[in-house]
Image 1 (tube, rainbow, N blue to C red):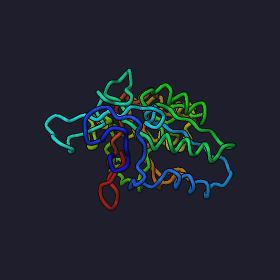
Image 2 (tube, rainbow, N blue to C red):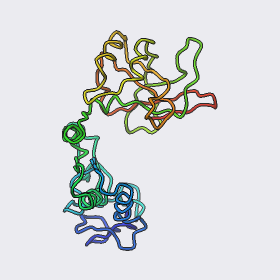
Image 3 (tube, helix red, strand yellow):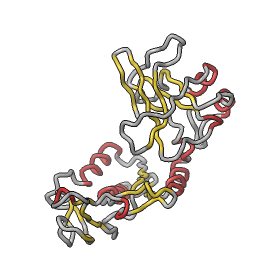
Image 4 (cartoon, helix red, strand yellow):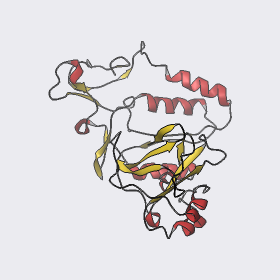
Length: 268
């Protein structure tokens, strides 16, 4: 961080840091570079920017606090990313917190200045899930219910097992774990459910009535895998149905490992 940021107080010492701003000799591309690129790309056409990050940013007055990690002396032990010094923290989940940011808020403000007469611009505090949901719904007409049910892109179609089901291991793992192993793997959904689930456009409230009707009888969480929809960035996709259309467990993500013709791969 010290290579891209300068504050009133030295960054190589513990304590509060104020009046922080970007270094003129930062190794990062300037925010204006990205704004100019988008301006050239879109001209005066509509531009929408919805940012979800820690609020407030350092630029409008956020405080940066540097502490020393236990057992690590000197500069290698200095950190700004720890729950007890976080810029914000989810009141309902103390393990969910966010560190300081400056460039994201600066980028959003620069976009609004460049595209004054077009689109929607908003910032939502990542530590306030309800605020994030309200911003998505207000500006994009898309509730979190729809986001939680978005399909997972696969680089190719999975291999098929002897019973006709996709050769995939799918299950929930703690969000913070990069390589977690699910405590329970999901079975494949029925063919009737998958026929609807894989082509569902997923509205702002989640799955369509047709999909819910086709999958409601599934006895547990399950998954489907097949060709992606025509406008998808990936050739194949995987979709999860939650028992009785419930939301996923809090603080988890979906782990996917599929066997492809060329070997094992996956996403998530």
